[in-house]
Length: 74
Image 1 (cartoon, rainbow, N blue to C red):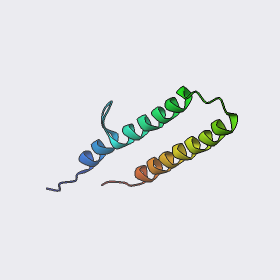
Image 2: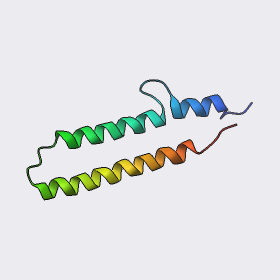
Image 3: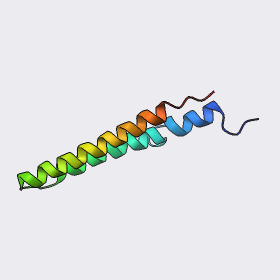
Image 4: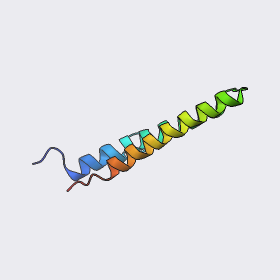
C-alpha cells in the first residue's frame, strides 16, 4: 500500500477549516492585507512603498498556490 495516497495528499493541501497548506496560505494573505490596513502610515511615500511590497507578497503567495495546485495526484 502506498504511503502517499491521493486522499492523503489531497488532505494535506485542502484540509478542513484551519488545516491544509492551501488554507494556511490563504490565511496568510488575509493577515498580510489586514496588517497593512491596520498600519498607521501618515507618509504617503512610505504607504506607497509598503503597498508595493504587500502586492508583491500577495502575488508570490498566489503564484505558490497556483504551483501547488498544478500538481496532480493519482
